[in-house]
Image 1: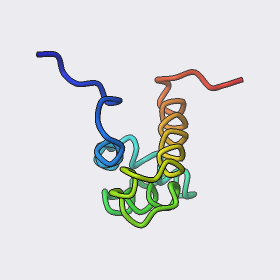
Image 2: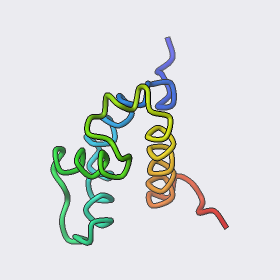
Image 3: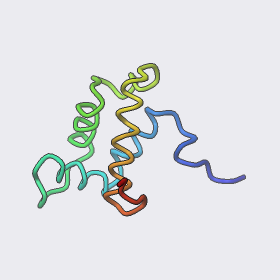
Image 4: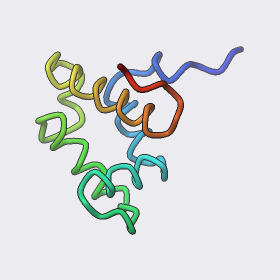
Length: 88
């Protein structure tokens, strides 16, 4: 059985996976002006909720605006990691 793609997971699960990713934790710290630090999971989750305009990641299940903001954040992260080319 093939491993599911990240995109196959629901948005709240994607958000949780991102918050556990050390690279995303570093990305969040840099975006908050703390380039020499790595955020812990809870600080990263707070950053993600703030970026998406939500109080709980569960809201990503039913809030299309928050889902769009998560997608933008994921794209920015993918560009930062070099996984995706920066848009021109």
